[in-house]
Image (cartoon, rainbow, N blue to C red; front, top):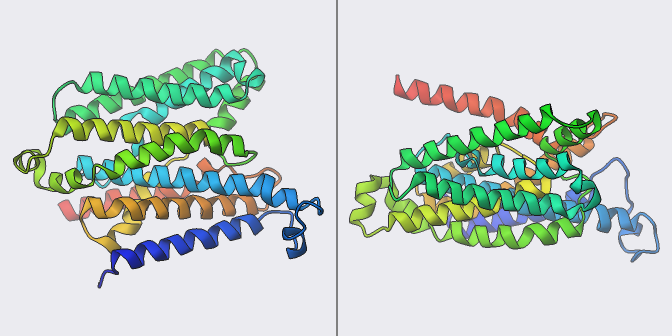
Length: 328
């Protein structure tokens, strides 16, 4: 298969994202005619597009780019096609921070506190990850530290659900954990954008190191790669992107797993070549999935996290079976 030039691939993915944004603004159970688009606020349906659907689409782009790039970076770092941002446990710790604001009731009184708590939880997860991994450059140690954080975060969320003071608190926690772009505003976009932007820049800086790591830790060190710096950039970059995404939408899984596998046949095995295309492809995946959940004929809107799990679960199983056949 002949691979397209990088500029052509990025241009095509960028155009796909733009088309999906337009489709996202048009998609919904309420059809908005073209006259409402140009009414500049005179038609009440204008606010449906620019006050409800536009921030939802922008947040979908941010979250998709964050999770797609984080997944590509993690798979390149651990040299494992099954790696996912959740491997580091940052999303679970971030979710635990947000759940605590719901459990304590502060999220209802101060809505933005949920986002702040989730991002703060992600920062705690990053620091804990670096402390647990220590000075060792071992990928195995790094992954084991992530699994420890994942277990702690999941146990904390389960404890909050068990001790929730009322059924309404349990319902609110469960609904938030399922992940959704519904009812998001420009305030959510403004809060998530800086953290995701910085995280994406840090992950892009890891490109040369990820390419060198295809030769193994020893080979990368021989090429002059600073493994401690690389580990720090990965931890901070994934922590900021995933933490801010969880803060804005709840847990939306499998984007970081699926996206690199969709792009890899088009760019080859170089991890650095995956990063930018995965950002655009991740945005496209989330926008497309969000449109599907909005158009689902049901009384209540299907949660984005549930839809992604329904797609990502079988995809993950297929990857496992494919790896098993290759190893046989």
